[in-house]
Length: 117
Image (cartoon, rainbow, N blue to C red; front, side, top):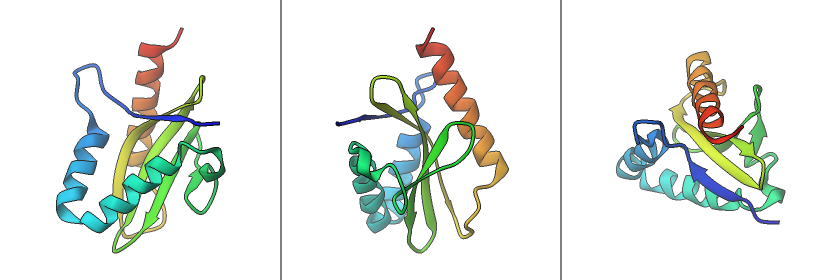
């Protein structure tokens, strides 16, 4: 069972995860390659669990890559075997900052409001 992985695009046409990935590619090509490989793996259900992926709260999950800095892409499931990546972050710590979680939740809700019901 394959999933489709898409990047969130806001109502203005901006794609913040693509911007994050482009910046990561310039600053740390090795971590960029690892994150892109992780996103590709999310197409298969067996990778929807640790160590690659972990559930958060609010229906969000994180794709995790540990390198010089911890790199995460926050995402959620959509009916029809679809995954929407909504936020990318890098940090030294293990915890996700509350403001980053709030950004991801806001983007998830925005996507849901514009694409469902």
